[in-house]
Length: 353
Image 1 (cartoon, rainbow, N blue to C red):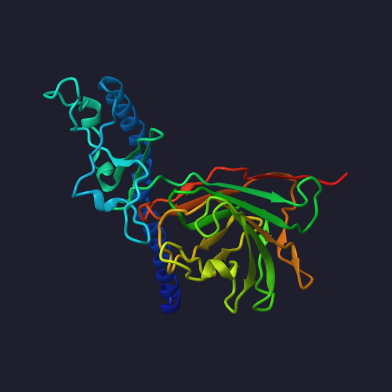
Image 2: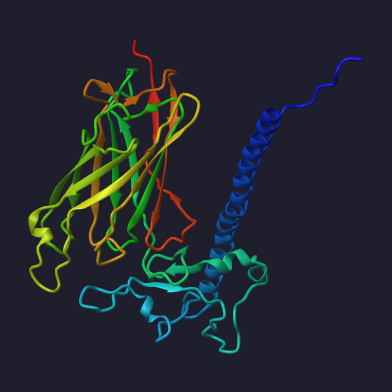
């Protein structure tokens, strides 16, 4: 009889390692399901609650939204100026137990609103009474309007296929809206973006910015500023250093908001021909006095196609329509929420004639 052979210790260990890796991958995927489900539920709840708020508004006389009136318990949610005075943007917390004016004994709580699942209780539902816009924010965050910014992406060679191309990222933010704290740009698969072969502190892009006339530093005057995008000693980590004019960094009087130079951290997850990538911009808010924008602001961030004869961004090899996705988190968003930013974020790569 031939000797029966079993698994060796090395083979058993290899199997256990593989099973451990698979288990960790499954646990990560499963752990994300509740949060994804919660976000979907909140988006669906928004439609229901918005319908209820509109119904309340139409039934009340004089017309009003179901809101919590400002008092000693919630007035501290109003944003504060530098001299500690309150600033009211017309944002209020929703309260469907509010009484309809024409009948003080009647409250408006529709049956379908009572059936909203507990997921809605994890956030704070608000309405901008000046514009009638309903939104949710982190519980206890300041009563300021949500961000209504816009983000456009363009290439210098969208109509002619070339291996490498310079890309421009155009961001617009608005005065008196929640400030961005993080921007995530998903790069479609097919692109190749990598700077690991470029020396640290190498200039790979530039920023040209504009602060509109409605600013507190020089009211009535448009302010221009610049920035530099550079590599660091850490692979796929960049910094975007913004240089504001000197007068914006200087304290002149107690009412002036200082705007010191900033260094934003950028983390790159390189895309490839088989998987998408990501540019994650973590905005520097150290020393910022407010969590809302003090004026309208525009960025034009350019990432070069080449640096030191090395391609930074390689276009996809297959001509097609490529959809970029940009999401942002603001000062009032709950930790787990990051919302899509509207704008032109599709690029057509064509073969040259």
